[in-house]
Image: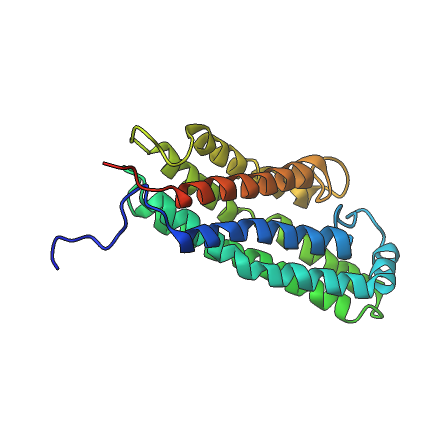
Amino acid sequence: MAGISVLPATGAAHPVRVWCARCGYAFAAIFLVGALGVAHWFPPLAPSDTAEATAAIYRTETLGIRTGLLIVFLGQILFPFLGAAIAAQTREIPGAGRVLSYAQLAAVGCASMAMVGPLAVFFATAYRPERAPELTQALNDVGWIAFMVAFPPFVAWAVAVGAAILSDISSRPGYPRWSGYASILVGLGQMPAGLLIFFTTGPFAWNGLFAFWIPALCFFGWILTITALTTRASAAKPESS
């Protein structure tokens, strides 16, 4: 019927959205188990390693690298569900409007491809570990550089989420205001990784403090925080009249 909204009111419980939001926990856990526990990919292979040293790691750790990265790859299935839950929840924020939700969804789609693409390069690198060391090193370079400099969609996503949270003009916001500022700061904190193309050692190399450790810790810290906040907001019961 005309004039009747099909959207639930802000503050209503959304069971499906809760489960989608919880995908953030599973995504982070699967990523870390595959990359850290199985592939031993954290910290990254040093860009200063020789071709022979890089190739030796792929030759001796072939099964672990393939298995761990496959686990990480499959974990990407969960990533869009988290993005959709956040976009849906922030869409209901008074004052946020639709455009920020659309920006989030577009950014999450791009971010998914930004993770899947480099992982495919790593698959190819580990597929033929017996190849010439120089070729293995070149593929490894492509994979790590592509993975680490793929921050633009993540920046756009976090900033869009933060802007939506900060636009909340209600008396009882679904997200605490600090999480809006934190989202923007986390997004901007990914950008120093762009400098890695100039360095093979030091804090701006792809295994360095500013190119890897700070962005990685901020990203996973934010994923867990925004997952918790979105889960709580999605599970909130409507206020009694």
